Image (cartoon, rainbow, N blue to C red; front, side, top):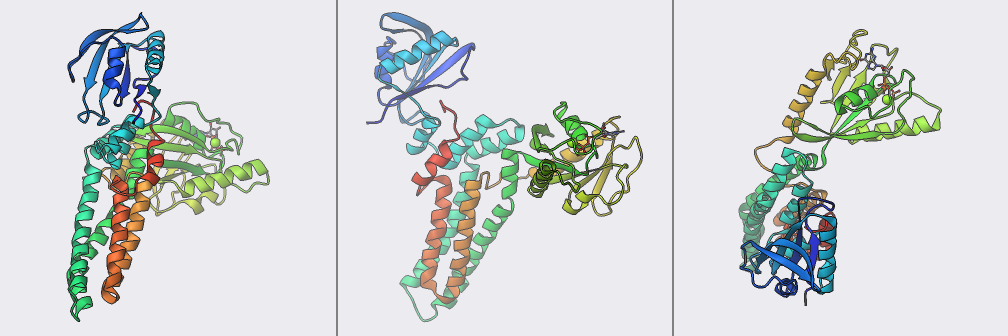
Length: 436
Ligand SMILES: Nc1nc2c(ncn2[C@@H]2O[C@H](COP(=O)(O)OP(=O)(O)OP(=O)(O)O)[C@@H](O)[C@H]2O)c(=O)[nH]1
Ligand SMILES: [Mg+2]
């Protein structure tokens, strides 16, 4: 017998309204136990809720009969007055009535297990709750609406076509099987492979929108990285001094630029150093720069000799020629540049504009990305490898192609949870908040 669970669905603490959700077979009994009497399903009823002769609250009660509910089970929502004492007393009453507090993500996990949504949609619920920018919200809503599931359904349709062609040839073989197969299933599989490759090439976009676009400030000591970090985050978060080597740790800040989430990192200035602490900071700066989506190379007219940061800048990065109030820096030819001053503020608007344009270029798109999480990307890589093997097998050992194609199908099914779900459930639902 499934447990009946409950959780506070609104943030803990004092508020105008607090919503407690209940889901499971005992829901109707529990409402009776609270003295609710009869309520019409899906209609809001105001009721006095009592437990052990005590009035707990006058609340709005909603009752949904499974399977037409969020979880697919009988569920109820109690819209209470949002005071701590009310919430606490209701929690005690529900435990007294035999209910169990829900685990993180348990409501959505039940929705998935009862076929109310697939795994990709369940992940979208978590993403929507976490969304802080419009782009994150749009991506999560698209995924919740089934955009990602639909993309995978299209992949699967092509795959099924290739599979049925292979099965047909193997079931009714003649001497020309490999030739026939290469002719019929070959192009179908080639298109499928091209689609997977395109989805993987685009996979960074979904991740960057969801987790934030990673921008790292890199440069020589005293170039003004921390000053620029403070200007971009509009906080005095990083220490700025005229002493070379002020910043040691990598400092991260989450900001929004042009409607997109960005993780901006300030780093230790690059130079040769015998100081173990500084050397470790420099190592971390380089590692962070390596994995960034964009490096901003901060330069200063005070630099003498070669700038050690030059070695870590990649095509497509940006040079910021800082301290324009003190003089000009000659930009390196093949890297875009902007000149500005963090002290006077000259050029800061242009930098904001440049960044917003870059983010829109990299992150906007006509379609929602097919990959928004590492979990999806891993499955696509698996599917692609197996598809390549199947393609090779078509020409030489067609009986093997069937097996390879089944592996492709398995990998794709794991994204939406059509098969093999047990191993991924923990991974997916552990990131949820309680009450969802
Ligand atoms: N005149 C002028 N000084 C600046 C400008 N930007 C930064 N500075 C000064 O340059 C010095 C170093 O600035 P920081 O922001 O600490 O430089 P940093 O690159 O973080 O240095 P490290 O942490 O040591 O690598 C400070 O004295 C700043 O006030 C600017 O645009 N104009
Ligand atoms: Mg610094």
